[in-house]
Amino acid sequence: MEDKILVSNSQIVQPDSLPPLVSALKASAKQDVASFHFPGHNRGRAAPPSLTQLIGVRPFIHDLPELPELDNLFSPDGPILEAQKQAASLFGASETWFLVGGTTCGIQAAVMATCSPGEYLILPRNSHVSAISAMVLSDTIPKYIIPEYSSDWDIAGGVIPSQVEKAIKELKKEGQKASAVFVTSPTYHGICSNLNEISQLCHYHGIPLIVDEAHGAHFGFHHHMPFSALQQGADLAVQSTHKVLCSLTQSSMLHMSGDIVDRERICRCLQTLQSTSPSYLLLASLDAARAQLNENPETIFNKAMELAVETKNHVKNIPGISMLESSSFPKFPMMDPLRLTFGFRQLGLSGYEADEILYGDQMVICELVGTQSITFAINLGTCRKHIHRLVSGLQHVSATSLSVEKVEKRVEHSGLAPFADIYISLNPREAFFARKRK
Ligand SMILES: Cc1ncc(COP(=O)(O)O)c(C=O)c1O
Image 1 (cartoon, rainbow, N blue to C red):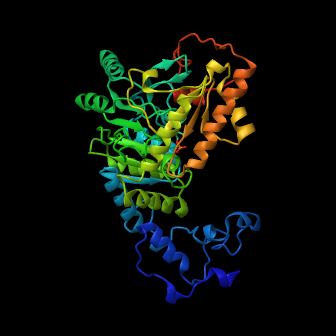
Image 2 (cartoon, protein in one colour):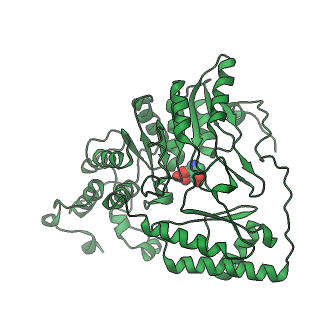
Image 3 (cartoon, rainbow, N blue to C red):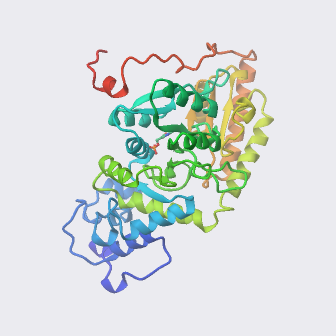
């Protein structure tokens, strides 16, 4: 096994055209060293066979610790710094941080870097759990906004600028000022808020805007794509590079624009929240995903966009299946063109039932299932063959359900968002540490 892993010194450290961190990882892994460092699989020599059977030994060979030539995530001055700089340049940020704890840790850091204990954060009531845990960590007080909600779809929309303004003014009346505004755009279903107006509003009041852009790392990279959060004036945007771009799961990026937010405080928060042993495979995958996008940023999504349009055109003709469109949420005209949500109510099926047929009969796997709908993510890896399978799967759902039951089964809803009834008796941190009973 050892012979296969070790490569002689004469073969290493050749300058190449690889992205900076990928190149450094390659060179470091090639060195013929006597290694007495972590991780314990020792550059693959003791990699567990059951896993190498699946993925080979190469991931282990490149699973290296913070060796001097690989730089340090928390005080970078080598290949990590260079990789982050190249990412910042591509995504239009003044500074970019690579994250190994997903967008979850980026959101926590963004909130902790802007809100101190006892201060206010304006955010949608249905924010991702990381925004809630961020408030637990920083002892921040929420000022919730209730986002739009469609009972037909049982889906939440975005946040409108006047809601943000109202929240800012209500706090002002109480003699308070929000330390940050937090908006999720796009939502999981691809619904975009008007960040341009929201950022202008925030800046008018001297408040930083944090955008949870977990689902929008591809925005701005095609002329039919919505603009990214940074392009619309956000101060901090956190993107799950692993969700819509091609890095490894758990790897994300935090981008900053301008200087409203204290960068040193972001660094401190990220160091507090992340492992002291960040995975170089995750970090290199961020560098590689950035390089992949950088090769042809204007055209890389052409095929995915074509496939998405093709799918929508096919599905329009399938009886009983509806499509989430901008007309479903008239206040939010911008939607992610690569996120497709289909409804099955006219067939008398819930999203869960339709998903069972699609997966069970057709082996089509979606991204998200809801009471009324199923959501599919189109990405750079989507191929026409799979689109055909999805379309014929949906045709199958329609045909089998129409023949069984032709009456539309309305699922009753109050019309109110399930998260609309807010009564705050404890702050998130107090609630987290309070004694509880099940
Ligand atoms: C809207 C939203 N924000 C944040 C996150 C957290 O992202 P990550 O999985 O990269 O930690 C998710 C994850 O699904 C999400 O849907």
